[in-house]
Amino acid sequence: MNFDDVSNYIQSLYKQKEVLTQKEYTSDMHVKEYIPTVDDESAAFLRLLIHLVKPKHILEIGTSVGFSTVSMALAAKPFGGKVTTIEFDETVAAQAQENFEKSGTADSITLLRGDTVEILQQLHGSYDIIFQDVDKRLYSLLLPSCLRLLASCGLLLSDDALFPILNLAKRWENQIAPVRSYNELLMRTPELESVLLPVGDGLMLSRKTEAA
Image (cartoon, rainbow, N blue to C red; front, side, top):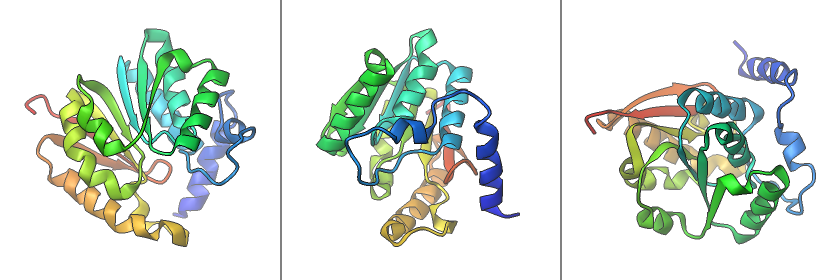
């Protein structure tokens, strides 16, 4: 089975529905350099998951320009769900905030700017869904904070879980080993039940057990 053919076929199916696409979202931005975002397939999965779970509180670690943030906020808005999202880069965060205003989702999103590790350590409360899509070298380091903040039976989604087997551009090579280690760490973590889904560049879906 050719992975690219599968992905292209899936993407062609999504184009038949009138939903916000990555291309449309990023077409009119001041930030012109390449900013990684989730693809349309991953965004569709996030929306569907939110429709099923109906989370009231969502935490995103790694805003980028906010495509995944807006996708989740739009899905959660009908039942009052809110998204808290963290971005380290001030320029990228400013672009994301502008995009939130344009998309009409700013009232559903709280954007926290600054060091991810420090912000997570200061956060309290619990989140029904946590979506991790930050620098992959931070994934394992952030896991204890994610576990603390994740509600019982809550869902932790970790993007780019298939990096170890993908043919990546050279600039992403330093992310491969950290993702491999993180995937293995999740499987060893007793508080989590995890499954790796071949969605986008790989989504690791982990559920916090009731006993945790």
